[in-house]
Image 1 (cartoon, rainbow, N blue to C red):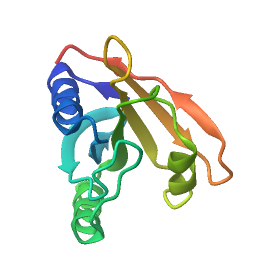
Image 2 (image 1 turned 45 degrees about the vertical axis):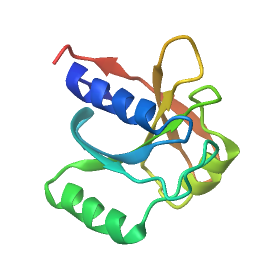
Image 3 (image 1 turned 45 degrees about the horizontal axis):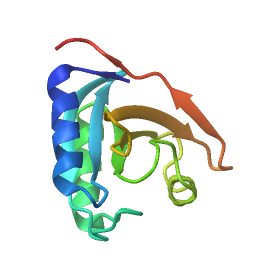
Length: 133
């Protein structure tokens, strides 16, 4: 995933604004490049998990896919490393082939890491880079 400086700052701002609870949202990707961010409300209002309104999520997914882009999911971990939790892995089985960006706020500096999570629970880290844009 390639994230420009502007989108990276928007992701970090969203995560910090929601802390200590997790933030969540969708990313629109053109190839591997982040071209759109769609922050969503975490209905769970929890530092341990996130929940989104399906009535808001479905139209966003269609909008991203209809524009020829690929959706990815993002959320934050405010108290643990940015690695998929068992809750994330369990949820990911409903989203096969979807990339997951996790924003870590627990360390001394924010960290962004991306993962593909297979239906069988296999986690494979994906590269995340910036482009200075």
